[in-house]
Length: 170
Image (cartoon, rainbow, N blue to C red; front, side, top):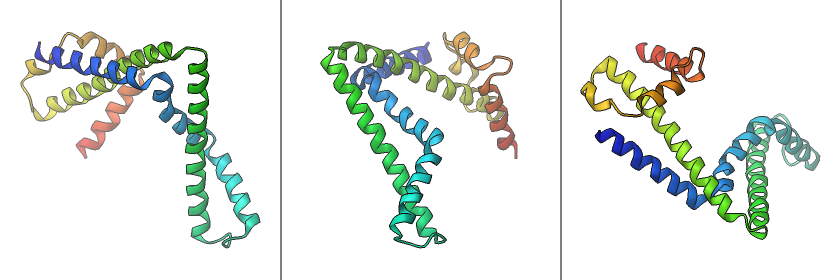
């Protein structure tokens, strides 16, 4: 019962935090990681080509590669920031800011529920091995939702849990 109240308070805080930030701002970090993963090599090649044309340092030095990586990283963050500001400006002009905030609140609650369920899952699994807390302390009303998310037959998190505890046993 006490854990249920704590979970609800944390999820409501996630909704409030998401409402304050808005949907677009919450996707900002996702946009940066998406661009780094999928377009990072392209940006790196463009920056590397520009640096070789400028001929500041030799192509074989480590400084050349480090400079290329740093410039690529900051240029991706800059492009994502400009994109976020343009989208927010369009939403303000079209009076869609309340929808942005409502979507941010919903996404914030989902995100906090997801992170909290991962933490509780790992805490329960660790508790089975080293007995940190009494068993009844970690029981809650959201047990079925957590199990639905994480105990599917071939779920990503089941594989992640197996990998985590393989390293734990080493």
